[in-house]
Length: 158
Image: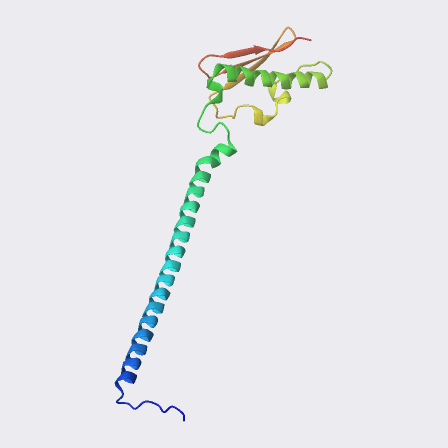
């Protein structure tokens, strides 16, 4: 014989239904809690990722703003000609250009410094520094005025 379904007044069947319903409700509650926690974790991760990206962008922008002028101009914010040793090296470099001019033009010195030295190596027109170029007995002499003390360098003779 086959087993017949229990009658509705069977207390054991009622208890089994109640227990099944309680377990199902607990499982649904646990699953919904896990889903809520997972969505909260995903939202928190998105927020942290967005905030980190924003902080990195701001820091990189600050670095570019701070270092940008220094990359374009290595002497940004400082006066390289205020140091006498650097000023002397600068003037000696200008005299090297005069020597190159002399070698290319058969031993003749340029009448002005502008002919021998590229314009971008000379101080700008609005600079407090002035260059004086003269030829003494066939020797070029360049004097840098405008610093703490004048810097004079004599070039090589013939």
